[in-house]
Length: 123
Image 1 (cartoon, rainbow, N blue to C red):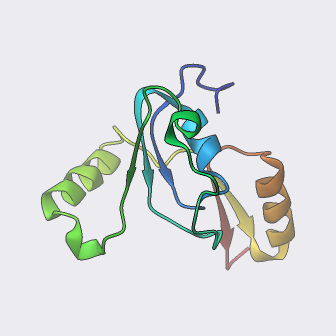
Image 2 (cartoon, rainbow, N blue to C red):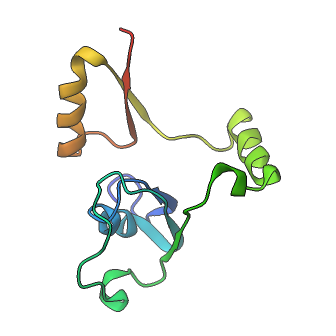
């Protein structure tokens, strides 16, 4: 990510979990924020967590563990409006038909693509 944005991203959402959290933090700019919101890796803790060494200087780490109903409707609507007027995007998306799902996994593991990788049930 730093090759594309040398100063880092303004904000990131971490959905995979503790194994990828250091990379997400490292990709975030000073005064940027990482929101830890997922545990897709099924690894629940950061072994030997020492915040001074683990967190980059000036990067904020927060977490979200609520339900959809916990998100204020006005906040959700503002985000949806920004998506509609294209002032915010979901970033690059790479779609794979299900018969190429092995390639999607290989691309994900190798870091070949930046952004979201999606498997589609149709060709």
